[in-house]
Length: 557
Image (tube, rainbow, N blue to C red):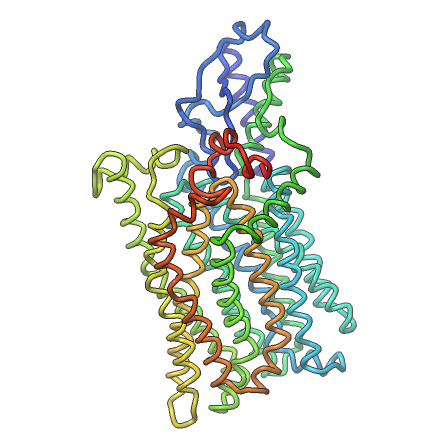
C-alpha cells in the first residue's frame, strides 16, 4: 500500500515539475547500492527545450540533496516507523530459527525418531537462511526492497504454517528448510534498507539497535519452547507462536513499509517523466544496467572472488562463524551446562537463554556513547567543530565523497568485545561444577552475549564502510558462512558434549577465540594497507573510482 502511495506521489511531483518547464538532470551519476545519496555537485537544472533535439539519454536523479522524495530526507518519524517495522521483522525471522530447539525431545517422540535426527529440523532452517542469502541482494536491487520483502514474508509465513501442521518428520524438515529459504531475504538485505534511510553517521546508532533484534530473537525464542516442552502443552505451539509473530509482522509490512531503494524510486520518476512529457530519453541509472541474470552472475562471481582473495572477508567472516558456532551450540549445550550439572528443569534451562539477551543489551548501552564519538569525529574532519556544531554536519556526511573516518575507526568497540569472548568461554568451561554456584555460569553467558553483540556489529559496520557498493557481496557470503556453521553445529553439538564434556568443549572453543582475539588490533593498525591491496575496498568501493580503474576490479563490476 505504501509503495502505491509513493508511486502516485512521485507522479504528482513530476507533473508539477513539468508544468514549470524544468527537469532535473543528473549526468554521469552512478547510484550506490549502500550509499545512494546523490551528490549535489552532479545536479543541474535543465530546460525541457534544451534537450529537445539531443539523442543522449537524460539520466534522472534527485532534485538536489534535499529532495523530499529521497528516503534519507523523509521526516524522522516516518523513518523511525520503517526502522521499527524492519526491527520486528528481523526479530520474528530469528525467533523462528530456534523456536522448537528446546522441544526437540517431544518432537522426536511424536515423530518416532531420535533426538539427533530431530536436530536436523532446526539445522535445515539455518541451511535455508544460508542458501537464500546469496541471492537476496541481486533480487532486491532488481525488483526493489518492498516487493521482495512482501513476497518472501508471505512465503515464510506459509511455510511456517506447513511446519506447524507437518504430519511427519520428513514434511517438517522440508517446510523448515523452505521457511528458512524465504526468511533469508529479510536477514540478508535489512542492512541495506537501513542504509537506504540513514547515512553513515546515523547508521552508527541505527545498525546496533536493529542487530539487537537478531540477538534477542535467537536468545528469547528457546524460552517459550522450553516451557512448552515442560508444561505438557502441545509442542506444535512452539511453531504456532512463530507463525503468529511472523504473521503479525507481515500485516505491518503490507500496510506500512514503503519502497526505500533509491534506484527503484528514480526509475519510477523516469517512467513518469516519459509519460508526462512524451520524451522517451528519460532514463534512470537502473534501467541502463545489466539484465537480471547477468547481475546474478556478477554478484555470485564477486562473492567467490572475495572468498578466495579478500583477507578482510575471510578473517572477519571466520571470526563471526566461531561466534555463531558457540551461540547455536549453546542451544543444545545448555541442557548439559545447567541441566546435568545443576539439575535445572527444561523450563529453567530455556529461561537461562535470557542471559545472552541481557549481555547483548549491556553492550548496546555503549552505543550512544560511541555514536557521539563518531559524530564528533565527522565534525572535526569537516569543519574542525565539536559538540553541537557537528549536528549540522551529519547531513553532509550522507553525501558520497564527504570526508568520513577510516573504517578502522569502527573497531574501537571490538577492542572491548574481542577479549571478552575467550574469557567468557574459559569462565563457562572452568567453573561449571556443582561446587560452584550456577550464577557463575550464567554470568559467563551474559559476558558471551556482550561479546557476541560487540563483534557482530563491529564486523558489519567495518565491512559496510570498507567495501561501499560492494559490501552486499561481502555481507552475503559471511551471512551464508555463519548460517551454514550454525546449522552444522546443531547436528554435531550433542555428540560433542556427550563425547568430551562441557569443560573440554569450552576450552577448545576458547583457544580458537584467543587466536582470533588480535584481529581488531591487526586491522586497526594494518587495515589501510590491506585495503589498498584489495580490488574492492577503500576508494575503489566508490562507483566513480571503480568505473575508472583498470584490472581486476573492472572485471567484477
